[in-house]
Image (cartoon, rainbow, N blue to C red):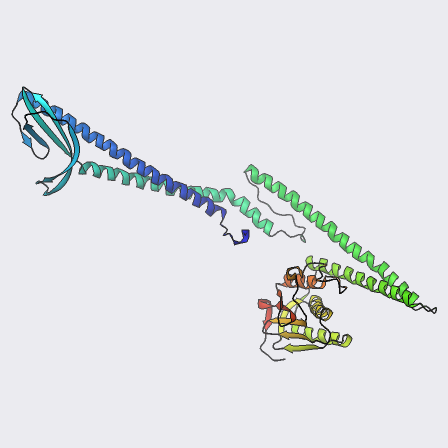
Length: 429
């Protein structure tokens, strides 16, 4: 599940978070500013209308004759006093020759014994223009501030996280086979400094444990060879003694001899696996892997009753250690012979950059994903070390080759994909 999730870089993640929060704050603050200024301007317009209305009342006290200043001021004598009305209205303005929006205040007052309706209006368009100008100015200023803070924050984060990213690259390049200390960049951040300390402690311990395990494996493998060889020799001497052995004794000794050979073979293969993982095979040369496979098949045909058919379309040349190439071919052919059905053919074939080997079988493997695990055997019917395909997989991983298994047409098929690692020649063998 985790592998399918799209990953994102830390700096980009923090930048996206900053962008999202900033955009949200800009939107909310702009809307809030708009409504606040709108209410403020509306209150100012109403205050201006009431102030104008008060001045008109003072003027009527001194001069009771109504006057007009359309559409801003209208004064009419009425018979009855009404209620105050405050509203928005649209009136034709002859000076502008268009319809304009006004804020209108209508009040009723008794002045010198006469009832008057006083109507005053203020143009709303000007206040809207002021509101829009203020909001746009605010948006421009806040956007400039936002861009400045964004790039400053991004630059600061990159500088702050530089030691982390540098140390991450060093961790990626960390190798157990190298004794060079890991070069970590120091940081003024306490957590990064503590992380560096823990990484150094951990890598030193891993290297120490690895060296101890490597030495232990090599020592055990070396020390086991001598007693195994001695036991093997003594069993052969007992079998070859002048005094004849009964069938039961001979069968038991032969079984012990086979187990010793299997144990010796297992020890050698474990040692080989250790050397491969330690990258101790550095003698790289260009080899014709198809020719080497053909020689391996010929050698096995001399000691096996199986019929092995070879069908190579193209020679494939690769750059690798000759010994490991020989081990790769031997293990593949040996595995096919070991698990092949009696009286059935084994087929070794090549294409442009692949080599496949197949043997007959009745059913597909139950756990093909475990094929390349150490000591894994599909069944206990065949006494094998369970290391042959593990060695093949490690060799392929070492040189970047691909390997896959499939069951097709009642045959187990293993294919090695040499890909770009191979040098292809379109020449028939």
